[in-house]
Image (cartoon, rainbow, N blue to C red):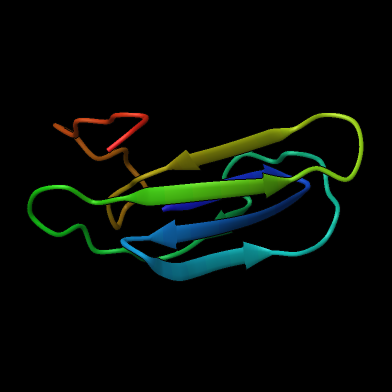
Length: 79
């Protein structure tokens, strides 16, 4: 998983708090990296952004170990 946020960001993956950035910054794509393991079936990702000033932005990509985007994923904005 690679992620960036403007400003603060927090990610919950299947109910577990797995990522937090707590300072102000502009959005930089792929600024932070982390490891997640998808389980078979539905996985729930909640990405929260706290905007301190200017733009409200967040970006996240699910990638394999080499950084390539995962294939054959179905994404929905609500469970």
